[in-house]
Every structure is written in structure tokens, then in C-alpha cells.
Length: 69
Image 1 (cartoon, rainbow, N blue to C red):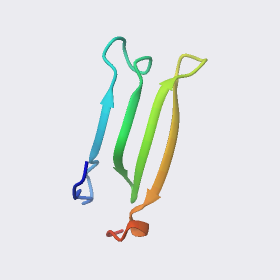
Image 2 (image 1 turned 120 degrees about the horizontal axis):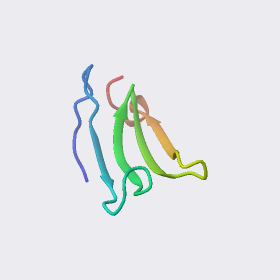
Image 3 (image 1 turned 30 degrees about the vertical axis):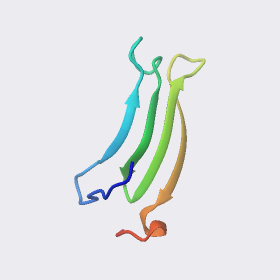
Image 4 (image 1 turned 45 degrees about the horizontal axis):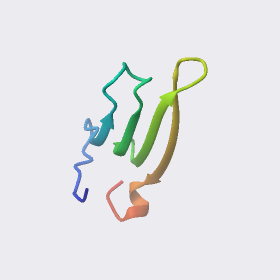
């Protein structure tokens, strides 16, 4: 995916996917791109041993990418 995203206050743009066989978080989630509070995130959620969502994330500040803060 290549695109421009609007990071105006109040927006939370994201490009993500979910599994379909079971309920979240057991079906998993992949956030390919998510903007949140001045950062771009790439996240994976899976079911942890405690049966709650376990998150694995990488983040990059928008300012590092040449965008607006």
C-alpha cells in the first residue's frame, strides 16, 4: 500500500486485517499501518497464554519520515 494519510486531530487512520474463524484476539490482528499520537505503528496481536491479547509493535515518529508532527 502506498498513500498519504490525514493526521489531523481526532483522526485515527489505519490499514489492518483480522482473521475470520474465531473471535478476536484468538483470530489475530495485523495492523499494517496505524497512525496514533504522532507515530506510525505496525502491530501484530495474538492470543497470549493468559487468553488476553498480546501485542508486538514497531513504531516510527511521523517527524522521522518527513511528515507533520
